[in-house]
Image (cartoon, rainbow, N blue to C red):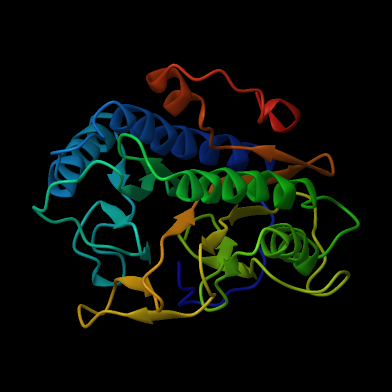
Length: 275
């Protein structure tokens, strides 16, 4: 998402990370619940209501609702929409893809999480975009460690995605997360090795590649929120909350609930498990 407030980096204690883990797990379970519902004919307004009800049932508040005056619980961005799409009554169609970005606030700390779902069967080139973008997320996370800097993560994501011929969005970045949804540092998905702020123990960041099938160029709708690819080609978006614990990246969020819902076996998160 756009970073609107720049703050000093605020490393978290283990106790604070534990609280953030709970918020991140709530948004992870929310996306897992939605995974069962995403199919042709379903509207994003329906998904939004399900998400809000579930988050509130967990004793949390929707993290996006009212944030910078955003009107809904979810950002839902189909096909050529990159991020910040507003839920509506248009049914999803076979062959669509849909980025679902979700936030929750509990005990004063935020969780922030996103996944791009295929709606039924999608074109092979679109399925490959989803695969590579998700792979780039973990490639970037692997660089979030003591001794590295912010742009090491972006460099890893950028080089991997551009090697596949994709466009890496420049205007939208990941970010620190904590008592505010968007904290320092910005976490771009591009960069130069060895540049940017040094990582420190206790940092918690949201790493979120936003990768286009075509060029990197984007535009914004008149609603003031929705971001689209300028060439109209599809875009993919995946996001994890990651804490730096004992010098290594540890996932506070997880895709395991999505995979359980969809019957997918995966070990991609094994090396980053916090618990």
